Image (cartoon, rainbow, N blue to C red):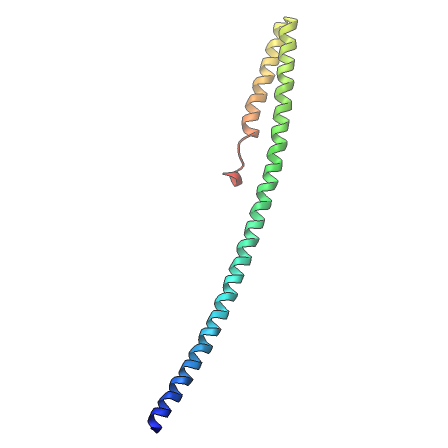
Amino acid sequence: LRGVEEAIRVVKENAEQQRETLAAYETEVRRQVERYRAEAEATLNEKTAELLQELHAARGRLLSVETRLSTGLTTLQHAISSKSKVETTSACSSLRRAVSDSRLALTPHPVLL
């Protein structure tokens, strides 16, 4: 009977030690998960800020392109109306440069790809 009681006591002690070890392991896993979550959230916030900044810059570039193309078209229309070959040629060249520049200005930033 003493041997059985001793075996039960040892089993209970081992079970208690395993519970403590498991609780410590669970606490450590939770701590690491929280750390990884916080790091991921910080990275997400940083990338979101970069994207918003680039979006704002892209909007500014788009507005500039729209203004330049609109001005170029208006100038070309006036040149055509005036029937001046020199003004029309100049306006066409200016508009071509504006179109070319607009392609560069509207190329998406790598952060948006």
